Length: 66
Image 1 (tube, one colour):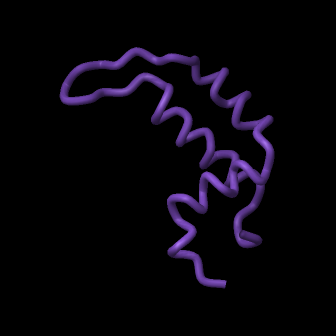
Image 2 (cartoon, rainbow, N blue to C red):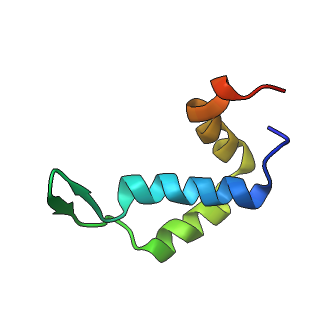
């Protein structure tokens, strides 16, 4: 996991949280946000590093070659 900066990982965490809890569209229907963008950004900033790495590894871990 040493190839990504902490900022890149936190940006990734924010995008994942926003896609799950932010406003989104599903089949033409707008689903209201559960949390504001600011709340999601703040949450991503305080997440433990190990948790963000685990979140990233669940999606991309099998593609990483070290």
